[in-house]
Picture 1 (cartoon, rainbow, N blue to C red):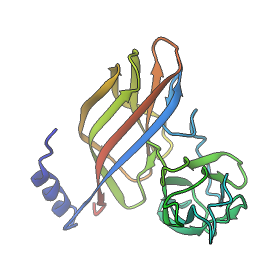
Picture 2: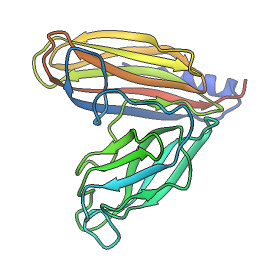
Picture 3: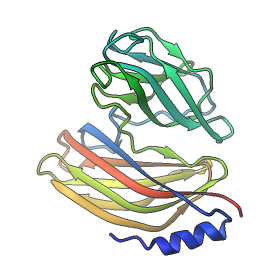
Picture 4: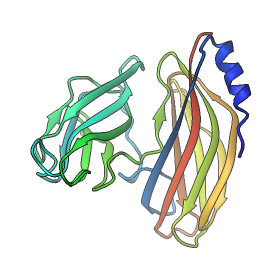
Length: 242
């Protein structure tokens, strides 16, 4: 799909912002069955936090440590308790737990920023809420960053969504939904798609999401069989001036 960037640039100027940021959220779930699940590598559904918490970061490999062959440092990007942008750099300690100094309400993305000779993470790296003990993000072995379709629009920003993509790893009858929940008012389905093996792309153009909106992709197998699903969606992030 071709996006008319002239329209988006005009929208940016209307909001007093000379530029905008394009981003892509992508995720994977290798065990989708007959009930809707979030498309992210942790599997199941993300347990959203009601208040911000510090995150316990740990790897399953001792090589993800200073002097090791795996990941050494990583970045956590998300929002704070007031929904404002919160980013933090973390130095890994292998299988030892490192707790963030900041408290996160949501994690939008994690990725490694330096590594040893292996040039990627040797183990699975997880971020778990310190009090709720629920996993909020995961980097699978050798991937280098999270694969999660969940995203939260930060305070002071709007998101202009453009495109949704879903695909299954094998021939199967699948259903996918793109959902939004603004300021905890409740989840609303914004797109529903049915797909089999291969790549299906549909337009999200015209969908605008305000600050403090949680977004995600879910999928289910219409046949009830466990299937692997990947999804991504693309959007423009603009500062909010009105």
